[in-house]
Length: 120
Image (cartoon, rainbow, N blue to C red):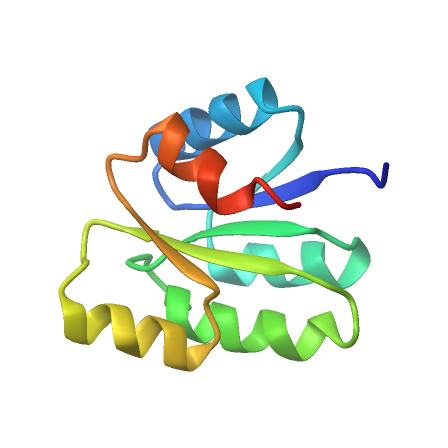
């Protein structure tokens, strides 16, 4: 089984801790980044099968970070999940359009996250 390494990107350390704890319990190794700008060099240096990406961050937004991650990704498979408090239908459509694979609404729960990544 390939290594299951996830990148959790959020400017809020409590949110990173919560998401990381859930993923660790599901058998994932976690790398954290506090901003989109910090996430990009990490993703360029190491392949991640999963990225949990906050939408509202100072500096590079979650949408812009997603677009840049897709450029870095190349042919490597990478599931990028937006996690956000913003989940209006028009926002969901926009997130999927810019390259997110799914949207997880905060506060996140283990069952919802687990179902989104069950096939990874």
